[in-house]
Image (tube, rainbow, N blue to C red; front, top):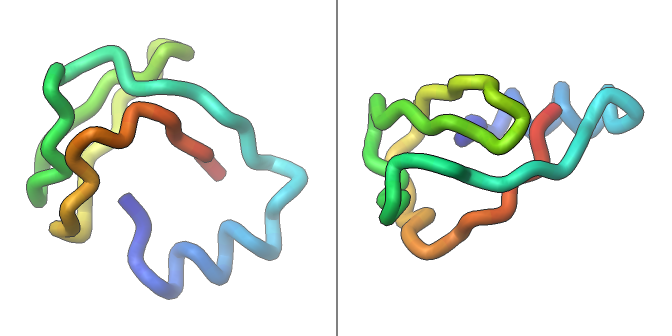
Length: 61
């Protein structure tokens, strides 16, 4: 869900990270612009297309 620069920024803020899981859509495909709902209720939009399918655990920063 993050681009390379986003990952670098996220690593710098590691203390702000938390683990959660994807509630929907099911199955999660990770397509560009796909909106996902996490178990904490937050909504995120996939910015980079990558084969995330099958991954249900998320570390969010």
